Length: 278
Image (cartoon, rainbow, N blue to C red):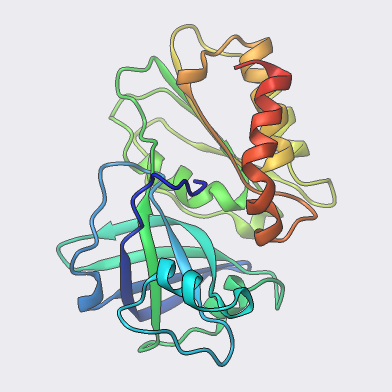
């Protein structure tokens, strides 16, 4: 999801908060809508994401909103911040966009904002992007991630074909963070309760302990970068899963702010590929 000079600038949308819901103690759901989403469109992926834009305090930006112009004309400390979130669902007919936010008290930027958001507020979004959808031709599917990947995993499960063979693992802090997900008959989610263990430990153990079915696997493994790195090594080097059958991304990095992680993410990923082989 890193920006490149050749990449087309993401489209800007201004949405209204329609309603909010606390779906678990640490997950808040925002339903966004309004005329500002008239040109919003997804492309069939289940990991679509948008960047939620947060203005710098006290700064008014020129209209129409243009990130390139802002970065050219304003000092860096006046640039808006943005946070990347998965599209939980998009209803084009009713023009409703659902995004789930992990909230841990007043930690971070997006979580506290989402927890305090009220109907009628406006928010700018950039995107959407995306690149994964379950391949119906695969013999089976592996979905694995923590809370940050849960919206994409849930969206993927809801799009699975009837009869699909799926192993889905989601690590959350405890049983109170489990969610109801509509899945095809016979597909269940294995919820892994972290408790006091380090983030990713339970997820890594579950995937390592899985007896892999025969045949072609299509895998989606996203979440904390250190855990994704370990699972990438396991799947590529120990299980022999081809690179093209893996969708992997470190959505966040333990001990790093969002800005710090995005600043090093490309180089970090390149180093991991060098270490583990392409």
